[in-house]
Structure formats: structure tokens, C-alpha cells
Image (cartoon, rainbow, N blue to C red; front, top):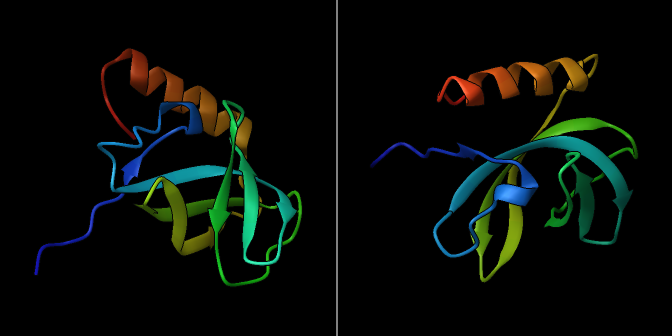
Length: 100
């Protein structure tokens, strides 16, 4: 069985036709009945998830794209994570043509 690979993405860069599994890092803005709203600074997206999350919590969501919707397969809490520093490092990697 091939290993699952989740491609790191920003919300504004999601390719809804080509991407199948992605990893997003961002802040939980709101918890809905079966989903949450994630903001990564480039956009906001609804992610379907069966579980409880705290508002304003920084997370990494490993998602499958099914029929133009995001379904969180795994949600990783990033307590004490410096999102601003992560974005700066991420940008340096992008300028160098590398992925984090």
C-alpha cells in the first residue's frame, strides 16, 4: 500500500481539481456542528471534522479533498507554535524554490 502524502498548502493555493490530500496550518476561527473555519492568513475555508476544537487555536489539518470539500483526516494541535515565525521561514523556503 503506498504511503499517504499530504502536500503543504496555503488556503489561497489549493488546487481543487488536482490536489487530493493537503496539509494546512492556521487558526480556528469558529467551530460549527460538523466543521470548523480555518484562517491561514491567505484565506478562510470550511473544513469538515467530527470533533471539538477551541476557537483561536493554531492547528495543522491533514485533509482529503472530496467533491470540492475539505475533510480533516487528522488535526494536530500546535500549542505554543509561533505562526508568524513559521510564515517567515515558509516564505524563505518558497523564495529558494523549496517546500517545507
